[in-house]
Image (cartoon, rainbow, N blue to C red):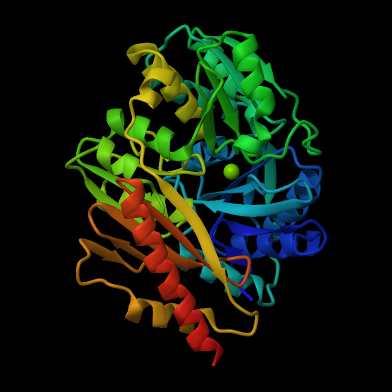
Length: 440
Ligand code: MG
């Protein structure tokens, strides 16, 4: 089994994410990297993983700089001055998880090839350096300040009233302070770093943000901001206390950020497409690392994922939830109420569902059958990067196997309800037929 997922190594503490693994990862990294900067989010296991990782690096003779409790974008920003950076975080996962994410000096996460290379080393026997060549470590306290300054220089400042829900994550070290220095009146929720995440789960999805929605109304704020455990994600609540969906927020950003080209995964709504008519859209597999890589390789203006990942390549290839929050303040300050902007976005009916199959069946084979059965002749565009996405102009359908259960997921969206019903039902019956054919 591969250790690396789409976001580095991640697992339950002392099951997959053990001090032994962190130590070995440190040694493996130290084979090729001499100057390494290390940060962590506030998870209870952070110091354990951090010390084991650094011990491995020191054993290889690396020069290690600790920046302590920081957000992932702060660590990626700091990595500019080193051979690489390591962030100890499990992002939006529950508190019992932790993980390691590796960063290049240009703010890009390690590529698939780099991760494979590192995994090979982790699985090998690594001899440490001699006593004369032991590594050294030092501590830096200015990583947050440097990151803040770079954000503050790159946004226009507006004095909005903003509620920030840090969720007790790494955002507590930076987001409220950045917005205050932009001239905002900031009310902070869950502003103490706490690895138990006692206030809410770290993922900034609507079901976790009741407190923020209520606070925005009670405080009569212009905006609510929510972040995940390591603050690379940012989601928002408008001035009427309504959660702004990922598709809506992406469409909003696109209206101002995208001139020529946009990168987004295959599951993004038509709302985004219609908001940026005539722009070249590059679709990727679902996962922020794929979006970042594509933004860099095609030189796009902007990239994003509806989970709250926003990539502003002028700033960094690392999704930066703090910069995204600052940018949102700038745009709302300049262009008026977020609720009006969201109401003005084109809306389309969307339907999500799926067809279950038995555990023993081969999802690759089912998908092959579906690809052969679905109508692609009348399609405007067919994309097989991540499952099968067929765009018919007036609507599209995405059919892909679930990553977590034996199920083929179906997502369809169309310009009107009748088209949606026809499209969804037709797709569902094909999927059912293909699943049945595999049963026999
Ligand atoms: Mg995250």
